[in-house]
Figure 1 (cartoon, rainbow, N blue to C red):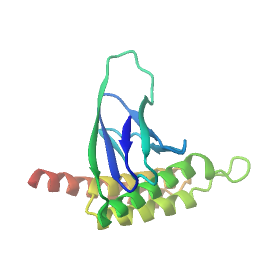
Figure 2 (figure 1 turned 135 degrees about the vertical axis):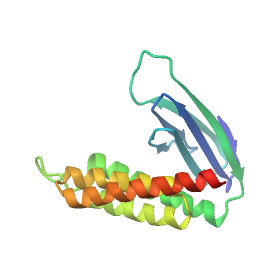
Figure 3 (figure 1 turned 30 degrees about the vertical axis):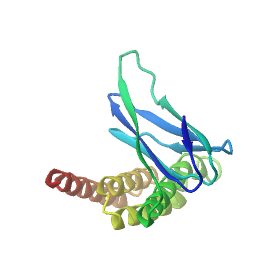
Figure 4 (figure 1 turned 90 degrees about the horizontal axis):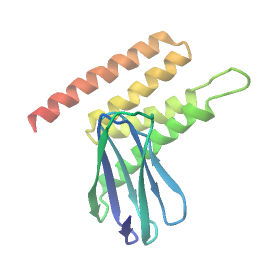
Length: 178
């Protein structure tokens, strides 16, 4: 539980140690704000529209009998900056793409059209690039590649996978220099 005054920027991070999880935040209005799990770490950021208590929940994506762990940390709790607002926009575009790729991409019987999801991921990638967040930008291109693959567009899938790999490598080198 996190008590948050109105207008406050909040960021919660899960660090996954062998466990693939989904992070969900229940807002004061009952709306669930979801962060889809990715290997390594997952974060959810928001600006509280109303004061209140927010509930942070972590759920395991795949059941396992092995003992696996994760950590949850409140990494930001402050007045929002322009960068914070842009990060939230990028994050929301990514999750809209994620939801569209799961449900909104089906057009008629057995016809999948992931173009709406691809557009959301491309817009998200553009914002992540402006924020110099290579890991997140690369993740967008990986999702785009998977959608192109589902659509049978092998050339664009390969190009997007390649771009994701290049960005991931560059982001890793950038983090090593810090």
